[in-house]
Image (cartoon, rainbow, N blue to C red; front, side, top):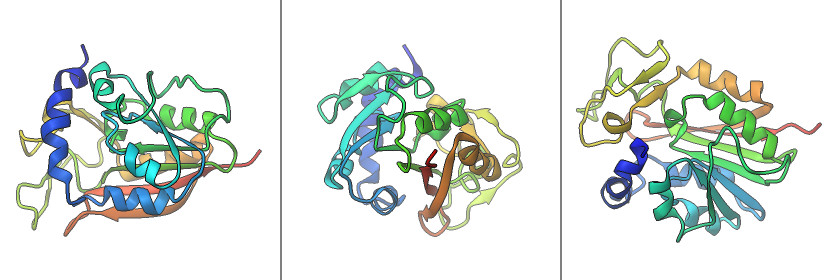
Length: 219
């Protein structure tokens, strides 16, 4: 059983309920950066599939992949899913019209490989939408106990994995996090064959999310 299997029920019924007002700007970023379909949109690391309705509302046909059987148990009523590693997707080259990754890059030890695999399954010109915690303001180095005065401690510049967290009511103290400084994250997109075209931040007063839209280059 993975760490994500063990927390799947808590994640579905308690953790996700706290973001009902979209205080992180996730829904807004998805709407603005993905935009309207039609076509098949893969959610890489779909978890319990709670974003499927938003993707479907934009005109796309959502499908999902995740490594956690516990998370997928909650996702199946929401969208077609398959249990798979995001670095080894069960799709043919160029088979998908869009790919999104929503608040999962810090759960993926090899996110550059995830991007490379997403580029493989995307059609030329297809968008990849990344929505994740902000590398500069969220992580084991950031104390967010006071939302109006974020304290950034040493550690931002050092990539790696940690379970350090300013709160025991969140996700990271339970499953850990993979941190990459902003330059490392941005460099991974063109290296994978994805060209960033738009950026966004969400959260107030200090950004908590950093998002971007990239497209697969035409051959």
